[in-house]
Image (cartoon, rainbow over all chains, first blue to last red; front, side, top):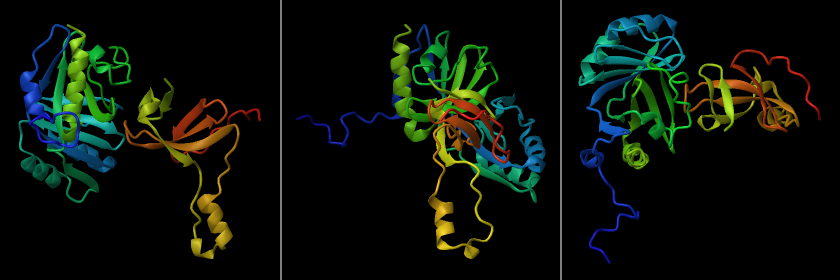
Length: 193
Length: 96
């Protein structure tokens, strides 16, 4: 019998920060935990889309599966009337206040989901290969160009995936799924040197 | 891998989708005027065809939207997909 307390699972529960600290850059692909960000889920009809974009500082993308970025901020198209607004390093409260002021009287939904998910960066020449170990999408540059974003799945977890450069993918995943995703990515990465 | 053509996102792997039952079933405008049998038919009776079937699908791990598809229940072939609110497109009658 070991000294470790019985947690009910055969695997130790490893916090994400410990996993990230132990991860070393690789030749093929590297993993990095992204700093905290303000995340707002925005849904609205035609009339609210323009003002929301103006208040956030960039035009919300209307093309399916594309994101717009300005400075550090980004707006990700998730559905025909649904976006996620990302502001790394910012506090969500003032952002919500600004947007709500601009959207007063217009039907919409604006929800602060900042703490719901964490960001993971997968970078390197084999980044697409590593992601494809769990993600069924075609990640070739022609099928998934720079500037594309989408909700999809990685193994058994839902993720939001976007490509910011040929060799850089960013994942947004629900916090409780993050260690699972991280460990799978780490395992897939090991095969790439 | 079976690819399904989401009307919003394009061709995507089947694993991102969930089935949503038969399409084009309108809720009766005045349910209280219906007999129990008519109400039961609305709730439970489905056509269950062998061949082309119009059905609802949801791109749950994608854009999150419901849409309709015509699928052949014999071959699992997706004949076409179209947005919710559009009427069922004309398709060739399938062999029974």
